[in-house]
Length: 64
Image (tube, rainbow, N blue to C red):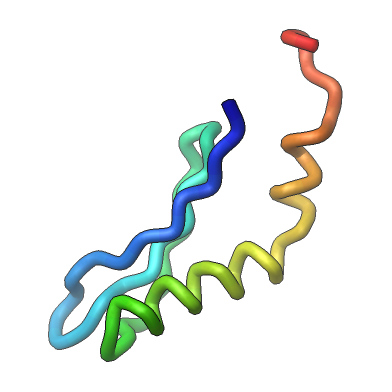
């Protein structure tokens, strides 16, 4: 199954955004955001900034 998970974890006085792809790759923000909602929104924007990562889900693989 193909998944992209957006999450927010506590970092200092705020929250850190993280994007996790089903292949195990995770990308976390360097900065902290004041709220969980802002951190998750930042993670979503990061996904949109990297469409090549999403296109890889549709690429033919050995399993297909």
